[in-house]
Image (cartoon, rainbow, N blue to C red; front, side):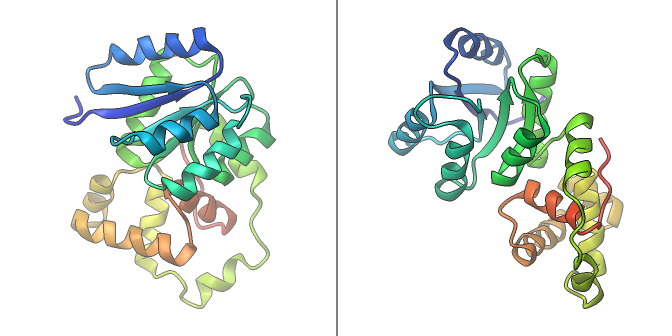
Amino acid sequence: MNNFTIKIVLVDDEILFRKGISFLLQREENIEVLFEASNGEELISNLNNSEIKPDIIIMDLKMPVLNGVEATKVIRKFFPDIKIIALTSYDTRSFVINMIQVGAVAYLVKNTTPADLINTINEVAKKGFFYNEKILKTIQDTMLPSKNSRINLESGFLSPREIEVLQLICNQKTTAEIAEELFLSPRTVEGHRNNLLLKTESRNIAGLVVYAIQNEIAVLTP
């Protein structure tokens, strides 16, 4: 049982689907649905007017007025601490990669099981991102290594310890698990993680994962 409540916002223009997800999540003791929105514009408006911000937004992609991709870009810019889980009917490679590149930390299709959705929410709250086996394969197959991938590593751009931490992050380890494996304190691991974010100019943990794949630093495992 988590000892904190995960605050959620749902964004989907299909009212019946949205209400069903809301009902499902409200039954979880550690999850609270703050509000719902039917499109990206309504979401941004509610966030601006809301004192309490969500930890996670569950975002549909195809919506009127302001779609999920554009809304995610706005969230990443103005509310960078909020994590975005894409929940959509579309699972084509281009949709997946586009959402991850603009900042989604997880990607689910709407035929997923309730257990998978709840597990993804808990994993994102705990680790900062969560990709299932299919999404991992899509990322790895699509985001080819850059030609200059080894230049930064050879010149000491990332320290050996930072590379170790990055590889463990890509293996979906928590800060506590990384600390235990490398015999470090959790605070030291957080320091390495923050340095990685700064050095790679990544906005979040998902960005680090993408960086690691593009530079052949790590092979992701589900």
